[in-house]
Image 1 (cartoon, helix red, strand yellow):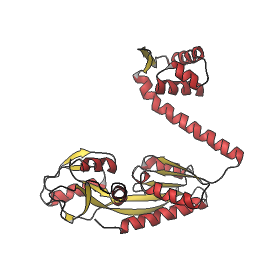
Image 2: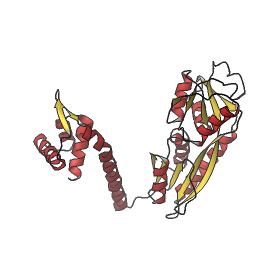
Image 3: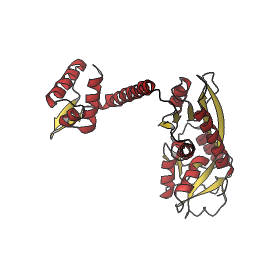
Length: 303
């Protein structure tokens, strides 16, 4: 098995056509068919079956494709690194982040920085917290944004606590209150994030402390998903200050309003940077701008 096998497999997965896959790889169709047969022979099982003129993946192929894509993306990054080194290129900043800051916070900060420093190349990669920490620790990324991160001798950490607000539909009977509480929202369905998170448990405890029933009805994996459900009147949600800021700026006439919650709660956000080697000047400046922007967002408590 070699990299050409993997690239052909990926092209067939994405196109469903041997002829198109062969053309993309500058192969003849017979050569591509022979290469696929060779790969399946090595694996000792079929990767595709033919139906109505298309090649459809087997369950085994579906399982392997994600891993194959990771390998090809890693190889592409390696090839790009070699190419940059060959041409002596500098000034690329690689940032890793969890999903939340990737939509509003980082595009704002990065675009402002690029306006002031044209010529900088930026790579923004979205991944989970564990991956952000590993990439930063290994020096593959200079700056990362993650959930709560413990101190480590592999990277530096600066933690920020983002206040959370209650997102509620503007036509909800309780939307006229400046501050919402578990009692005001008794029997209200909640749209929640990870049930293992500290915020979830704090919200649940706030209901139990009042002798009320907590009703987590819809579970989502991002605050933007939660806001979509709130906008449709499916319930209420706790949203951190960064996603609240993004929503209010993007959807000026949106159907969701934000109110303070009676029990102070927050979501952790960690800015981490590599101590594998000294930070580049762009990384230092960007880290500074991220922290300053977060300070402004946290300070804005208008509802």
